[in-house]
Length: 200
Image (cartoon, rainbow, N blue to C red; front, side, top):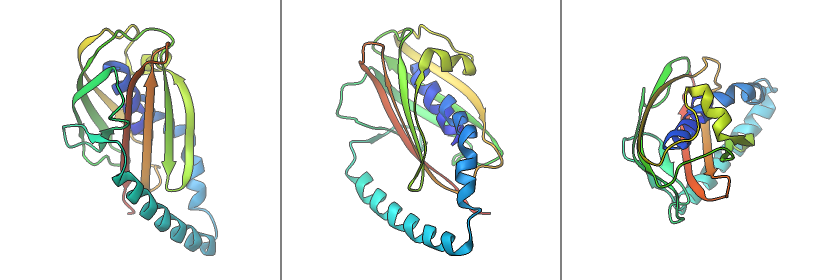
């Protein structure tokens, strides 16, 4: 989920989340290991994965989420909770994302409060039932990787960035969730998306 973890940071970052996607580069080997197991393990894995997605889809139907306008796979999670970021639109191109292709990401929204040093984002990336990433990142440090810096001023924000999705991303479904908070633990935003890279 290289590109998606990046998107999570840029969105969380500007409007206060595009860096989240590139963090996935560090974890591709974990997902690749699934495809290098003996065939009998693979068939067992396929069955477990089907069961996981069935359960995950049922659970997702009851989630407190709301799609963000723009026809991207990104949704606001924990929607009933008060959040400092209101997203008006997120667009991505190509949609859906493609392995080996650059992804252009545009987000528009409004921040109710200036984001300063100490803000952080908790990122979870799952590949089926495998947790690839569960980590906390300093927003102000990470956004420098996408040519942004703190403080992120309150008010209307528009950001457009391009991120690279590696060719080696293993096919399958990835679920990414990013929850961002100020240094005082005020809820900035919660973003989630399911992205599928097809089997060739």
